Length: 241
Image 1 (tube, one colour):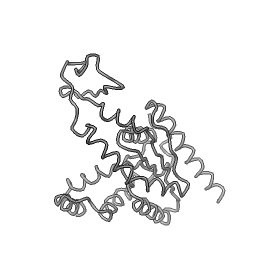
Image 2 (cartoon, one colour):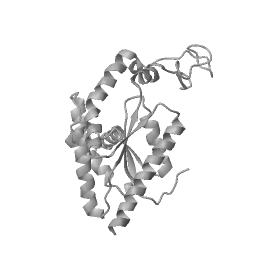
Image 3 (tube, helix red, strand yellow):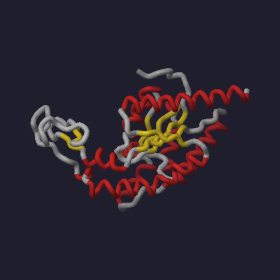
């Protein structure tokens, strides 16, 4: 059940490699505080499907096999963050991915400050998972092609090896869960996002948590971090008043 929906949570930024549980925790935060979850991938697909000017430009770029440039993503993200349903805050999943994007977001929030007279400083939470554990989480995933149930051969194996507990279908491994695919993805994440973590660490905003724990325990820890951030911001506001 959502809690204290009248509170202003502000932006919550989740950083974490593939397999860290970032998407799961983003959904938990969104439900707990009744704030929207922003996935830049979803935003991009939405603009393309709606045929907006930004969507048409992005589709043309992707059709050439190129990455959508930051300047275009800024327009897509800004368009969403200016909507009324974001008045109490939001969870950013997948943005910012670079130090340049983090700097743009700070400037955007500063601009919003002058418009609404409320300073929003993001709470930035990095989910840390041991590299070996990440490989086991990702390469161990198996799914049932019939019912869609997900297993992990290391942590949550089926009762009978390679067979679904519900319908005895032979489990499959996605091509992008194979180790030869996963390792380059993890290496690319490390190179790309390390500067983002350093950007926020240098500004005293980065909070690192151990994501090698149960989902509920991790969620409770994250809620505590967010609540402390909100209380600290409220305290600063009372001091200035």
